[in-house]
Length: 145
Image (tube, rainbow, N blue to C red; front, side, top):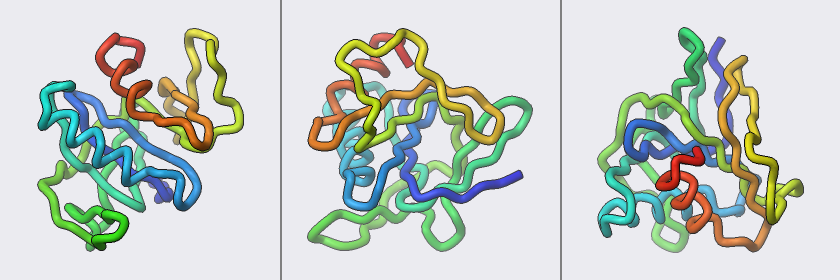
């Protein structure tokens, strides 16, 4: 089964970060920030998978993300419009970041998981108004994801 959701995905190292949230919550902004972190050396590698809409498909117990036709390599930069970037055709999702999450906690339980298409994946909840980048980078670089 394949699902299309409103989200963004960025490959960071060997795993994709799937960024979900309501319109205007900062999905594209977080994706661009992760790409900038890779350029600055804060994380080893990052490449766009998809922005705005993501196809998700469970294959052999793995959740794969890819851009829909016509949107591959495109990302919206608020105030500048659509921009074309290098992109990855498909990536295995290893972390889900939920922006504007009502269940954000200062000290969440150690193993927060979300199940998408039957695949359990680590989840990071970020409240509205909170900067998600430091938490996401910490999760990616500390092995918490």
